[in-house]
Image (cartoon, rainbow, N blue to C red):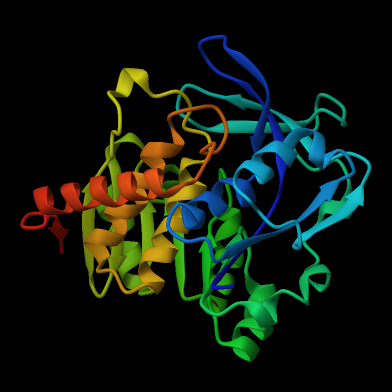
Length: 311
């Protein structure tokens, strides 16, 4: 396989500020990030710990997309299942339905903690890249041994306390991603310009997500901006859950496949544009979706290529 995606599988129950409550939505960083690769290539796989009830929730989606279960390891009776409560500013709290109401975690059992020994058999198969969420220090020996690239997506709702662990993790990856709110908290800045300066100083290629505005690909001493890809009018968009995961993974695919920084951001935004069209991940990732995402990204690129660079 070319790409492997690691992380959590979660059944999401979504509570929105406007009162909507949507139950049993397929989710988890590994599911959404996987779509960022799968839109463009079939040569990718998921590595995750799941519960005995996984097929009840995710089986149909796996079958429709002809996905392998090789990287799934059953470690508990129940797959992670959480109530995801959004605030007006887009931040959220995850609480497992299997834990007391004051618990703030989607993980109801230590059996879901990231233990890469469960996936030792997959890493030798990876030719190009591995996506990792939150912390990638544990990837250092695998990255060195097998020669693949690593993309780190920063922790959700990260604060200043996360910064030392983040900086240590960046030593073990090739690309990374963070969003605007997280960058303000982690680096103690209050503007995109200040955050971009920090990212440029760090020097490692960073896919910087700035919400509904769009994204920057920060690398080679510059920041390349691409606006949001609205596949449909904004008032017809359904749910932004997972846009960060899916766009980050798409950015990694683009970087590994040799696309320039601006096209990388355009491709990533296009995938996010498809992700927001429904609750849960993109239902079927077929040639039509791939062609649509590529065409939209190319159109966006042509519109902005002469004016997008931010130094």
